[in-house]
Image 1 (cartoon, one colour):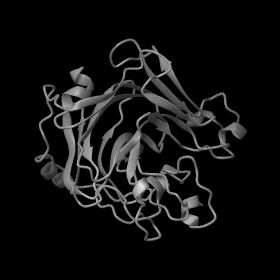
Image 2 (cartoon, one colour; image 1 turned 60 degrees about the horizontal axis):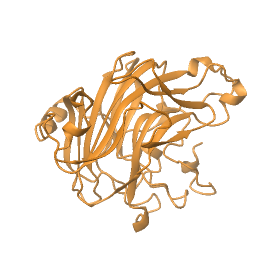
Image 3 (cartoon, helix red, strand yellow; image 1 turned 90 degrees about the vertical axis):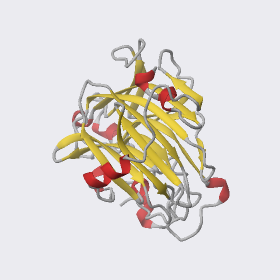
Image 4 (spheres, one colour; image 1 turned 45 degrees about the vertical axis):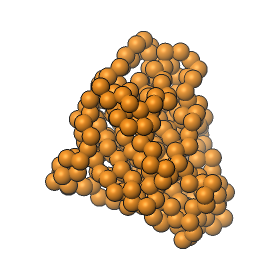
Length: 315
């Protein structure tokens, strides 16, 4: 049973975004309909490379190691390295793997897998009205099954694990849809009180598309975080708007015990980029769990009209 579900007696983890061993068990809110998405898309700003009035904050093209804009966030069964095998642009990219084939079953079950990078500047305050822009490109090469996430705009870590206020404002999730491995986009649209379900607390799956292996997919995210119904999220994939919604309460500002999140915790974390999960089972062999992902051209900016500063196709 997940630690959050016990409601008592759990020590705080270093990172408590997801407490479930199997991503199929996460209780996401059902997807939006196609009609809802089409209606929402009409309110989004135009995505053009000339929009560059924001302030560029993070640039990571993975051309040298160690990576200057990020810190490693890996578990023993995970690796993050620089690789010249694939590159969206330039000479190299970041390679993330989980479930490496050489691991023994004992090593496989030590902890959940994580091969992530976390931005050095993690805090994204709630309710400040600032527009944030993230751009990046993903190239999955081996992905035999679900994992927890490829990207997280992470909730703050609870000060008392028994009172969970997890719930990612934005998650890009690799999951099977009708038997086909796909990208799925999770958005926290109606936050408030956390449901104590980790990253899926109040998070809705709003879009999916089959995952093409050995092919780059560019994503751009534009958002502001609000506990008062003034948040918004716009997302583009390969330059095409796939989600847009305004008037969101896109944070869980009350914990699962009914207490407001304290002022010093009212800021989210991110971006966390790479592969998180899944766990190995005790009786499983390691190799079926091997997943490999390449990430490139990660940029962040804040301010108005920042699409052209962060979109990989604009660089």
